[in-house]
Every structure is written in structure tokens, then in C-alpha cells.
Image (cartoon, rainbow, N blue to C red):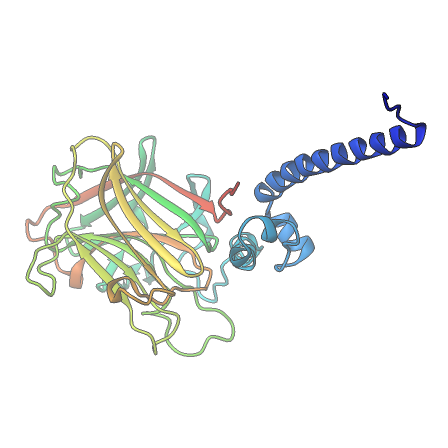
Length: 339
């Protein structure tokens, strides 16, 4: 005998089918929302919902990263970008713009006479920083009575993010940046400014530094021409420095020196024509490799570039030198997209 479905049974089955469809649709919607949530951890959401924001983002993506990522985002983008300077190195007429950022030329005089400043010490002359169509020219020059050097300082402070300095491989005197005169140094770095409430000396703290020079030997007796250095937050912590040797891929293509700085890690690299020339990184959280353990600064700082003489001594070859910085670029810290 053929069974017939009652209206009640039909209604029940229809409700079950609808319920199943809703569950499936909800799962799809959840996946879509999840995907969007993983891509939408922004400075806005961190600030509006607090650094512990993550009911959706953290539970779906990576709970351990959420608070750290928000802290890094806020620190990189917070409005403390104006450096507090109690004694500026330069006057306003020496302020200029390069790569979309305002800079000061470092110089100190007394009665029209240049005064020696660190590093070196050197006589830093604002005339040795020249903005041209091909980039920023930094000079080491002989005025007849003294050798002078060049340095510029950003008008704003930076914190976590990616810093890229693009440098011509060849100096105007024919030398190359991997074979500088033994007394010449190129520095690309961050360096702290004095602030109200600071106690004691800042030199030797916070700095994150790329330095090119024809150094003598490292601790193992090897010659090197590049030094990466991370200075600590306090003198109770050691600085970490990594001497390396690099060789140019060619003498015409610009070289990109990159620093990636987060609250716990600093990564350095040099590349030319997409070829990696050197790299090194260190982290506050490293526990297994002493060479990669460092105390990373958490203080916002201006960026500096300088071209100077070690100990203030004249170049060994007695020649003036000029280098070109093609470009500088800073990208604030962002959270990696996770799916």
C-alpha cells in the first residue's frame, strides 16, 4: 500500500530543508566575513575599538598577533611625528624638501666659522647638501683651510615601518660605495632627538644604522665594508652590530638599502637590480641564536643621512668626494593580510 505524506510531514520536511539551507548560507557568509575581517585590521579599527580589538579578527586569523599588530599600527601612525628639538641644528632657511619629506641641513657656526660636531668630529657645512634633478648630493669638500662634510636630518620623526635609501653605486670621483676611501663613511640611519624629561646621554641609544666604509677587520680578521647596527633602549643592554662585506652587481644601477623596524625586530638588506647583496636581522624575542638577539628601540626618531670623515681626518687619497642619494621612502607598519 502506497504511503501518502500528510500536510504536517511535508511542512516538517520543508522546514528542515530551509534550516539546512540557512546553515549552509550562514557558513558561506561567515567565511566571507572572516576573509574580510582578516584583511581589515587597520589603524582606524585599532584606535576606535582599542588595541585588544579582535573578537572577529583575532579569533579567525591569529590571536597571538592581534594586540601586537594594533600596538605597532598605532605607534607607526600616531601623531607624534613632529620631533621635539630644544636646540635645532639648522635655521629655517636651510630647510628643504626631498622625496616628499622636509629636512634640515646640519651646520653649526660661531661668528661665521664652522664648529666641529659629531660624528668624527667633523665640520658639517650646509653647502655640502645639494638638491639636484638626479637626487640629493652629499659632499666631502676641501675649502682650502679645512675638510667639510655633509648631513641632513628629517624634520619629522618616524617609528615602525620600512625605510628604503636608494643610492648611486659610484661617486663622482670614480670610487664605488663598496670601495670607499678608508677615511670616508656613508651613514643611513635613525637617531634620537632630546625630549623634555630625558635624563642623561642619548648617544649610544635607540639608533638603527646602516654604515658604509672601508672598515679594517672584524673580530675574525675579515675585511668588511658594511655595518648594520641596532642600539638598545638603555645602557643596561648591549648594542648589536653586524659587519658584512658586499660586492656591487654593477656600477650603474642604484643600490637599495632597506631597514624594516617593528617593536621587536629589525631587518636590514641591500639589493641591486633585484639581486640581494647582503641581509641580517635581529629580534628582542630571539632565544636560540645570540647573533640575532638585540634590544630594539621603541622610541620615534628622525631619519638622518651623512657623508663624513672618520676622526675628522682628510681622505687618504686627498680627493673631494660626492655621492648621490636617488630617493628615500618610508612606509608605515602595516599588518600582513591573512586568509
